[in-house]
Amino acid sequence: MKRTTGIDARRIRSDFPILSGRMVYLDSAATSQKPNKVIEAMNTYYKKYNANVHRGVYRISEEATEAYEAAHRKVADFIGAQSHEEIIFVRNATEAINLVAYSWALANVKKGDEILVTRMEHHSNLVPWQFVCKKTGAKLKFIEIDKNGELVYDDMGKLMTSRTKLVAVTHVSNVLGTVNDISRIIKEAHKVGARVLVDAAQSVPHMPARVGDADFLVFSGHKMCGPTGIGVLYAKRAHLEKMEPFLYGGDMISRVTYENAEWNALPWKFEAGTPNVAGAVGLAAAIGYLEGVGMENVRTHERMLTEYAIKKLSTIKGVTIYGRPRERGGVVAFNLAGVHPHDLASVLDDYNVCVRAGHHCAQPLLNALGVGACARVSFYIYNTRDDVDALVVAIGKAKKVFGV
Image (cartoon, rainbow, N blue to C red; front, side):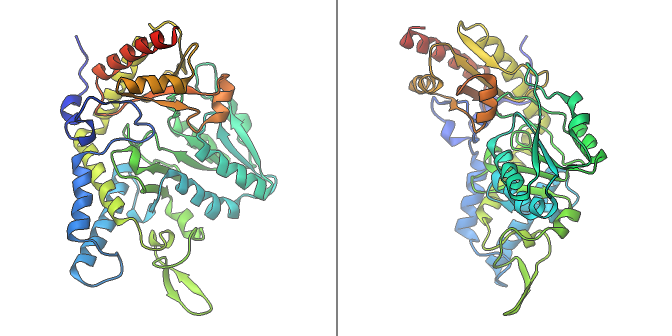
């Protein structure tokens, strides 16, 4: 008997115009496809109330302002923030992390302090902290991973000390699929007075995710059925009130003289210039769409597909799967012996199967795994078992092409 997941992926697929053909899209960890509801919401903004926000007292400007502010409230409710004032719109999760690096870390991390990250971080949650450490004289330390691709939690007590000022950790690895125990990490970090930044780019789109007691949390709209160019920084209000702006200019001010300036109220203090209003409208529509599907259903569906994919891929001679965590997201990274992942991805594309290939912005992790690159499949609400079967068939054809 087939396990039910609470959603009809075939029906959901019909909501995504780009998937109307034969394409098997297995790269949602890089970016998700967009449903009609999101596309139409953005088109309606441009067609009916395109205007700048917080600027005009005419009708369409007020409509745009209301939609833009409503999007902040929608995000706050979706992730369990206390107020929309704790929601900062940026371009993507990468910019959100950089905002924290420049506005919080450079002011709070000093020589001799320590920043703690994991060995499985995306470059976006590693390179900014390398920069901060070089700039301030702080030290970068790492939580190790075991042979299954899970964090070695027993080491945290030794790694987290009174010198630890920030712990920056991914919720879900974009390579190994590992779902980290964020609550445990936050609890341990706060014991020593450290702040915690959670990279939730691979979790907020795929499972029920709440900010909890995290100090900072970041994610991108384009990975959760929303448009590109819109991302979110959540930060506790107490931090935002003390932080200096990251960008300066229009709309982030309350009063300006020739000599000085005073900052606007939250969250506008951190949103300089004309914002991505259409992106905010699209993100709000995407959240509404996902709420209609149900995030518990999303998680259950992806678990089923991932288990099925691992089972099927494990039967293919020459396939090596990276990471065997007990709790994982909808990501499976693998290699086919004798075939470079770029070549594999190219041949799979000939059979309308889209997979990722490369280092997945996690070069240090892949080096630790002993590979320079790998292929990766990642699932979402519009994928089915048939997509996995099509992947397996295409890999079989690739094996014949390369003679392996």
